[in-house]
Image (tube, rainbow, N blue to C red):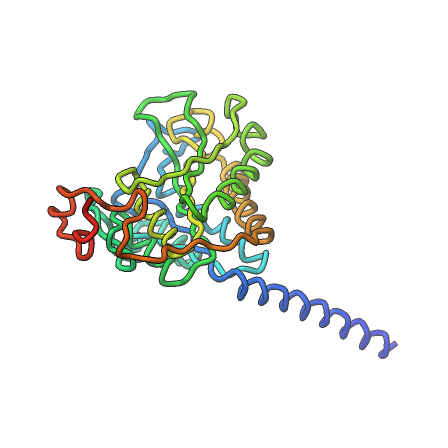
Length: 302
């Protein structure tokens, strides 16, 4: 009897060891996955026109609640994961407790008024919220997912195109994987979307919203996407996302897309080779360059 118990203990321990080894290999191979909560407390981003299910759907608040669900999916698959936000830690409940529980890393540099700043690593890349991209570059992240919700205005609508924005060289695989997961698990599968699926849109010109972050990550060989797949002012989306089960399914689908990409991707990373040569779409706007007095950007005026 004791011998059988000993054998079972050894077998169980072997399984746990094997699983931990797989997780460690994945973590070392894939690096850290960065999940960035869009906007910041005090600059919450998009907001629904009114309450649904007793809740007013707000972009930043939603992701404080549910970024931890995405993180859980990624970590269970064996990758390291960190949640960032470019603002200060929330002080009001329940968000203060949620942030601590999820381990949100507060970068404490909110871009009040959408102020555009250069990347410290690629100074010709300029955009608001650049601190989050710079953190991913510093961590040599496996990928970064900027978690957002979309809006087409301040009134209820049934329209809106569910998209995942991505960087030019490195982001398409990650974006397609997240789109596939959302299409298979959520959009038109509990979350009404008018029969439309999620699609991928590349952002390349720095002047476009969010392209500065994507391009800075691209220059460092990091797949980067911005999730804009749900609309706070689409009543059907709001109905779905203000229910805990729906919000969790949405977040889990994003996590599954990230994991599926990390497990299957073998594409060599593209890295910008020469910082002194402007890339297509790089910061080259003379008036704004002079206004911002961006170090290193003036050499690239064209």
